[in-house]
Length: 232
Image 1: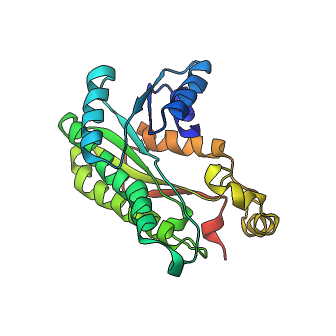
Image 2: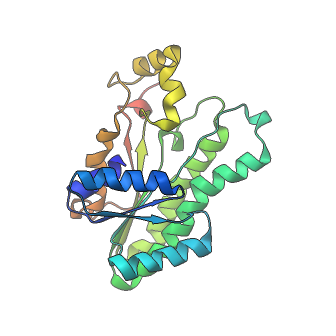
Image 3: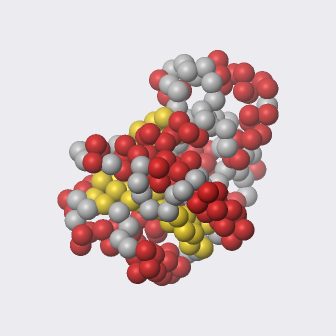
């Protein structure tokens, strides 16, 4: 929600997506309290037909989609030799298929208009790894290269496609790691900025990539990681 908040505060009208109606309504209400223009749209980003219908409905009801942030994601931690096939497919559908499906559906609307910004949420795991998260690493590496491929194919049509690569941030996905004192101490010591990231740290980066200031930035992954990818 921090990314939506930052874009809304910069003047964007927002449409939030989710699969859980209660959580989606809660997020919309929280942003409206802050005076932002926002509505929710419930659909599953891993189902191609649902995505196409939703993108059309959003454009019909709310106007052209100028900025797309592909932010669906999940994480499952376990040794690779124990990772169930079903979990592999679920993770890839959520993390990778959604970027392709929503990105393609929105790009088809942007191409005739000759303008658009697509921001895919990558990760420091697009570059570096940790034990017990190999499938997640594979998914985020795929998003990095899909981002570059989108930029190559859609750049000639006036669309800029870039990635935003968060480091270790305090979120629902990392709650167990935050509570692990040994890991948290190791991470802070390894991070040049000497702290966990706060979701608010991502706001300036997403606004930059969505703005005219990034008009000649295309196919790039901007890492907001406190320097994690710069050090051993």
